[in-house]
Image (cartoon, rainbow, N blue to C red; front, side, top):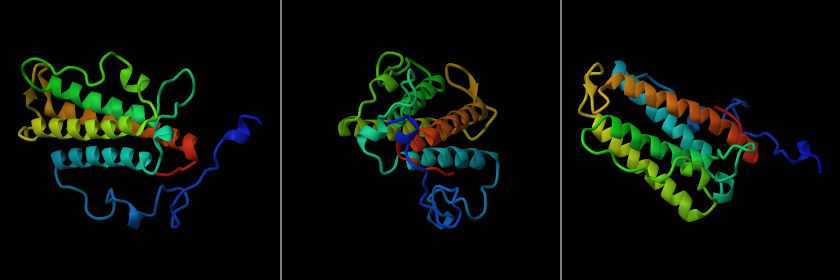
Length: 189
């Protein structure tokens, strides 16, 4: 069997726009309607949009599919991305707080991807870690409404932290698009 015949057939759940992930009326990201007013609400809306996009790209897959690696020698997988973003949320929180930094969640460098194995317990833990770390970082940032304020041991501007988070999630959502298409052929926004 040739490598080309092993590839999944491209598909979507959308019926209105065939190049979309799902129909706009079914999209939980709420892209219809008014956009937020102001810089801070806009930045937070973008972060939430990309967080939900990552979850959508992982939805409906088995642990084995979530852990499927992309192209060798890369260790990237959808599950690895979830674990990586949990780790990154903790790192960001370490930048914007005082005191001793929290330890890495998964230990040594690369373990977020290397140890992303197709077991339900690993999947459940990864999503719980991500939710916990997102909520903790959000809670630390919430009191800082002045986007120009510099906070934490790194003295990073709140605006810079929010834009950095958007950039990280957006980049990895692009990876998730390709990973998902390789797993089962599903494509879209």
